Image (cartoon, rainbow, N blue to C red; front, side, top):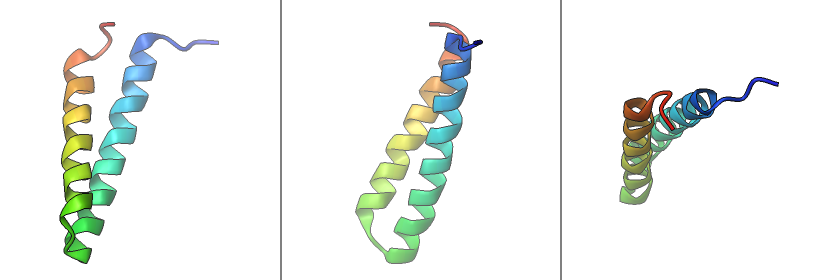
Length: 56
């Protein structure tokens, strides 16, 4: 089973990106600030996972 740290970082990166997009669209359509804040947090997680890349 191949499950290196880079695979996990990739998973976290794409999952956080999808969550960010979903919450951003949902928050804007509802006009609620809480999902938008969650989306911004998810984008920050995405950015950190992207910067980290394959490094532990």
